[in-house]
Length: 83
Image 1: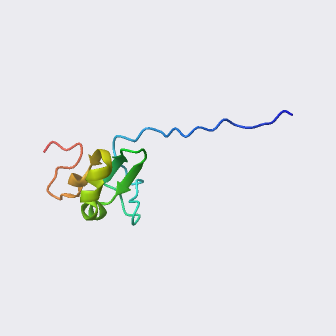
Image 2: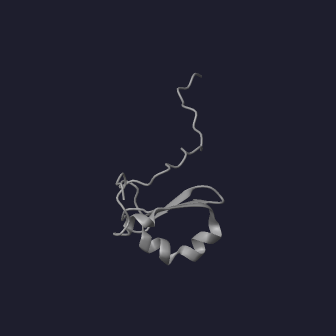
Image 3: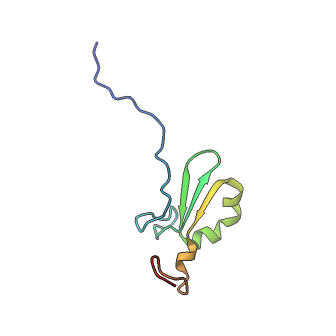
């Protein structure tokens, strides 16, 4: 019997280096500013509010953390500015 089936893998694409407006918090759907890669595999995205709320537990399970909450500081220079 000849079957037309695709091979399926569980590999995931590598995380993007920079979070974009399309990256949404896994808790509430707001824009994500924190990406946490979990030691056991996978990743979670959080808005700044939920990153603070769950910060202690996230540090326990994180392999890496990519934090862009500095983008929320109104005093921070805009990307590409000469400041």
